[in-house]
Amino acid sequence: KKHRGGGHKGGRGMAGTGKRNKSKWTWVIKYMPNYLGKHGFHRPKAVQREVIAVNLKFIDEHLDELMQMGVAYEEEGKIIVDTTQFADKVLGTGKLTKPLVIKAYSFSPKAQERIEAAGGEALLA
Image (cartoon, rainbow, N blue to C red; front, side, top):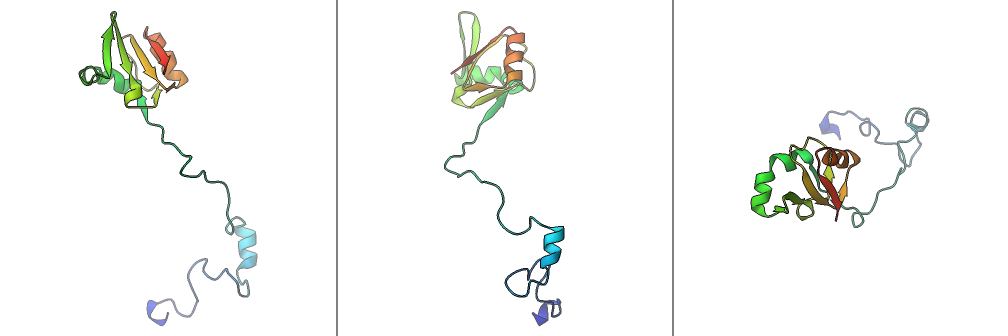
């Protein structure tokens, strides 16, 4: 301790708020009442699931590439985009320039509104 330039303080910051003589206890209770103890709830990692989202802007800009990959295809004069192969949810950022039929596990309300406004259809998979 003598060689670290801290003097004989016995720690830094909130060090020493522990077992013996509770020297900082009244300060902690007054100014930082939530400092000690555990707070809140954490969902177990096994239960958590990352939602992969895609925006309408991405679908509209990369439509040609999606058709080459086989994710999007034309059927009865309609272009169908199956986003279930690469995403879980479709979000509403951006605009559609063509009427598209988009299949997805879920849609945001804004995405559904914009797909229908462009003359397309939102299908839940």
